[in-house]
Image 1 (cartoon, helix red, strand yellow):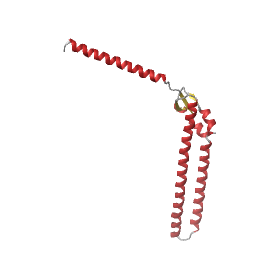
Image 2: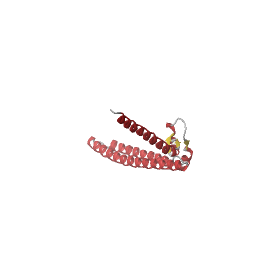
Image 3: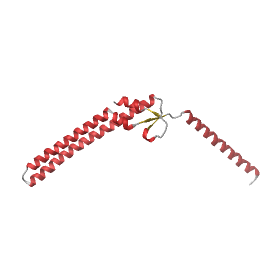
Image 4: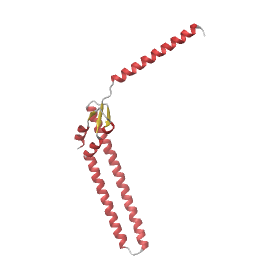
Length: 158
């Protein structure tokens, strides 16, 4: 290989290194100009303080009591029946009714929990934005650092 070709490759290599360094510097400056501000939130405390979650929990307890009452009434009617065939039919009938009711309750509860979770996330995001935070982490996953916004969030969910 001639000296002229070596110089061309050397020059190309030098230009590539300079371009890579400049690209890294530009990326670094862009990232550093938009420093992330971290917030932390104690999700367990927020959930335990949430009136919406408490209402869902109370509603779930009422649903479970209603299912227990249905089962108790069904057991009484089945026990009162004398014929084994009739007992079996009643048992299947009541079991189907109870399972259908349970499915409705489960779907209602799941959609309520999903809506409550979305609402809590929106509240957390709103508090973080008002505090100038760009990233929110759960407090349990952070060893050190971040601004704790739990108290502000708890005040809004009570």
